[in-house]
Image 1 (cartoon, rainbow, N blue to C red):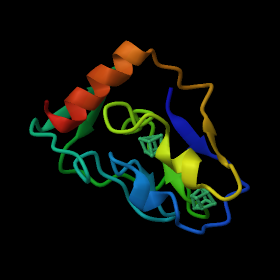
Image 2: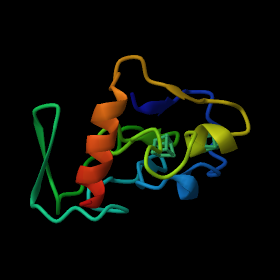
Image 3: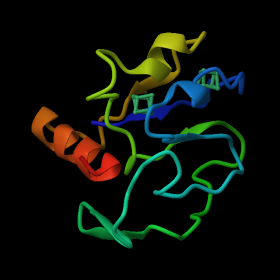
Image 4: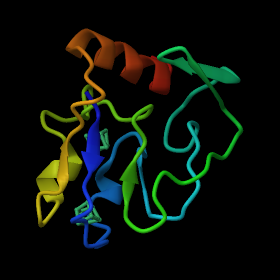
Length: 116
Ligand code: SF4
Ligand code: SF4
């Protein structure tokens, strides 16, 4: 499953540079699927939803850092543990129970995002 950031976030910014998929954005910042990934195809399909490589999407939060579930792989393929959760000083990067994914799917997701 992907991780999410709860409302307790103090906007310290420690998590954002640690994400190997650039799945973490500052509140108010637009996100894109291609930023921090090596997607080559124009379209990326995630859970039946089409995401366009060159499109910038609206922020998921305007107030606190947020995680894009379409990009989060629990750090699989890069690190043993989710890096955002490891560095967050107040433990507000937690598992998103609404976005459960199997390890097999997370590995596929990582391969899609990084084209390998
Ligand atoms: S778990 Fe890893 S991939 Fe997911 S948002 Fe945190 S740092 Fe990024
Ligand atoms: S490390 Fe934690 S408190 Fe800091 S910005 Fe990220 S989620 Fe928020």
